[in-house]
Structure formats: structure tokens, C-alpha cells
Length: 175
Image (cartoon, rainbow, N blue to C red; front, top):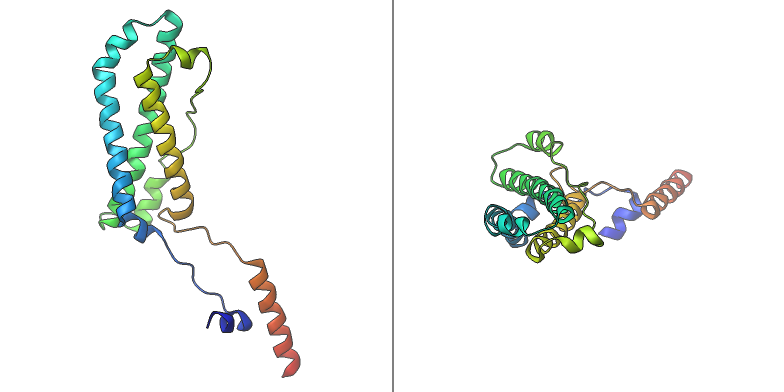
């Protein structure tokens, strides 16, 4: 069947992963992990983090303030993406609404230098939260690129396209 489609130059519709992803066990685990990280970070920054920040040098305090702001901003963007995906899956948003909302979510940027004096001055627990948030961000960025509300990017298959052109040329000659 697939060979026949290729011989005839027939384009097949791509499989859209967005609906499958949002309803999958993998997504539910990712959602739980992301929301738990948001909660854990908030608890740390509002609790033990305050004491940890008071014990830092002036340079360490500046690094703490900068990185905690980057961390919370990153996590809010990731949480927005996760909630958006869940809303689409639950039928709370149409694809058009999801695309409009997705444009507001920024999954790139707010990089953190994970080496050097500023990084080394940060409390271990904050560094752990930052590292975990960066790993989560990378996973979500990969998923978003391949499986966002718009579905995977439609990329032509140059080999299939050429086979289709050749098949059409031979069919035209033989008629």
C-alpha cells in the first residue's frame, strides 16, 4: 500500500501528535513533574531560600536574586505551556485559541550560566532547582517543536517528491 502511494506520488497526511501527546501517560507524568517543580521552587524561595540568601556575600546575593528571578520566570512559562496543552486535551480550548495563547508562551531565553563564580556562590538547593528547570525546559521545547497544538511541522520528503515526479512523467509518456 505504501509503495503504491509512493509510485502514484500520493501525499499522505502526517500523523498529528498533539492530541495523542496531551492525553498520554508521558504527558501526565511531565505535567506532574513540572507542577511539582513549580511548587517545590515556590516553597524553597518563600522558606529556606530566604535564609540561604541572607548568608551570601554581596556578589552571591546579586547572583541569587538574578537566578531566582530567571528560575521563577522560566517555570511560569513552562507551567503555562503545560496548562495550555492540558486545556486543549480537555477540550477547554479550540486549536485556534490554543495557537493564540501559545504565542504568549516563551520557551526560549532566560539562560542561566551554570558555571563560574556566580553559579558557585548559589546555594546547592537553588542550583539543583535551576538545573532541573533547565532539563524540563529542554524536554518541553523538544516536545513543543514536534508536537505542539499546530501538530508537527510538515516537512516534504524530497525522495518521495522525486519518485512522484518520475512516476508522473512516465505515466504521461505511456498515455
